Length: 395
Image 1 (cartoon, helix red, strand yellow):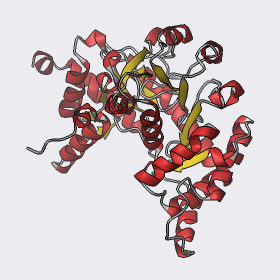
Image 2 (image 1 turned 120 degrees about the horizontal axis):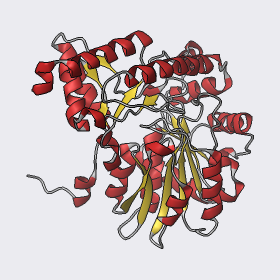
Image 3 (image 1 turned 90 degrees about the horizontal axis):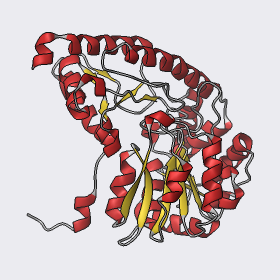
């Protein structure tokens, strides 16, 4: 066996893709599978965005671009942030990358090393903890509790900061819980961080335009006191149904933007040129497709919460954002990973175990409602039937 570097043993994975592979294998065998596991919109990328990419290719944009993104795209990001959030961001602080994970990786590797600590949400996106461990840093979980709407407590977060803390990761609206952090908690966190001026913050706001029932998305960009240590993660994948385009961006503090660009040069050189022109069209073009998609998700959210609460042993609070429901399944008496497997194999419904998102995800499952209302209702009916079957309950 080839002797790998020790750090390779620290890399985790994203279970959603493993479940997707198994679901596709079952479909190849002729099984009818409803996938409520994968976290991507089921809408097509709006046509004007696709046309912009095609035009870019026909116009000859086939070569390398600047490592941090073409100036027109970085300018479009800056204008969009001004329009949506009222915040002035110089385009030189914007670094365009091939997907949101790249910003996570860059930020964590920039601050994580042996002897340091990085705080991250748990249950939370699994790549946070995976890359923290890969960097050599110690991952310190921020427990997101159901009774708090899966928001963090600013007091608890601040209490976890030690002299070893280098970075805090927050995510609102959140994957996998759909939790939205209230402004009061963010205000309290920012106020408390004044006592810790050497701690950086990465705010993952990839679902920032997906909130419901009048909830406010509070961007940390709106806190100028954090400007010299805030890394904003955002992109096109969720908002514009562009997951496969692999297009994201970060806003970096001025002092870190050059480091991020250098990492880009070493890692991927630049982002696909035609995708960058598509990104401009997305930001500068009509926003009705975004509003229509979010309205559809809002309707599906009501359906899936009602349906999940109709399953004996399930209990689901209303998610405030994103397109995930995170029901408590402790009443079934079945652990999360076992139930994930049973629902796929017996009911033909792909969902994700809460433990895929950290130790505090035990007792929960993640359901994506980025699927049709008809499929959601059919999937829940299958689950009710599978769990009610005497033969299967005793198996």
